[in-house]
Length: 361
Image (tube, rainbow, N blue to C red; front, side, top):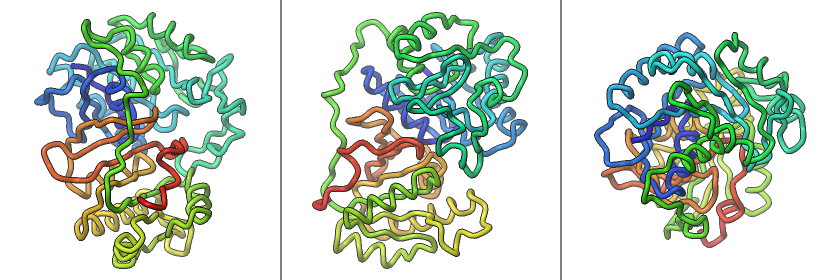
């Protein structure tokens, strides 16, 4: 058993998908339970928006429970651009796991996110000159990795990585005394090194994103992607609903058109309202829709949004299903009827085979 602690649900889903592509079964949990046949358990601790003290306390408590279950190894999934109290959580986890060293490697060279001379770049641009500079909760005002972590880096390694091969070299240097902390490329590199004998990687071409017959609902609570998603939906004739969401109108549209996008938007209903409250209201609207009609396919954009929808629906365990694209987690409620949940971080684009929605969806 391999256990991942992720600070949001989209990260947990992303690494569950990575495990699946390495031929391992995976489950996403909102409350850790070792009582599963899954090879990989990805736990959403939902700590990105907490204070460093709160996040550390929760991460340490969960890690102690994980250690008691005797996993093969533990990985800390952090945001690729280091949003949230990353190092506070990592130190708490390392302390609980008895690991004196930490390696933080959040670069995702496969997605154009690299670290060069201690600076973070997204598609060639310094991080603080990208859209992340305007992140409402964690604005990136520097590209310096050490400054973003914002803590004493004693016994913490933060290596450069400009290529997938460089990530693999760093992964090979992680020993039993080191807690690995990072993004999807780092986790995938560790899996490639440590994958159990007899388990073979499944070719990327073997995966297909589920296209279940029936309506598709897109729920976007990500400020980072809203403008792009709204413009694309308008261009492709996909009906858009923003806060306050009229659930009756959405249901009528799904029944008539087979597709709809609901999001927080930027209208009067969002003014001076904390992001977590807006996400909670959006999740409640989505849950109201799901309770009144079958929606076979649900696209959830943004980790906080996905977590809120899943929490409101009462799902605590979700099985990872096949995905056609890296970065997209496809989940289904374990042991219960429910839609296929396609989950991604707000900071990445949907792959073209998923978005924009086909008119026949």
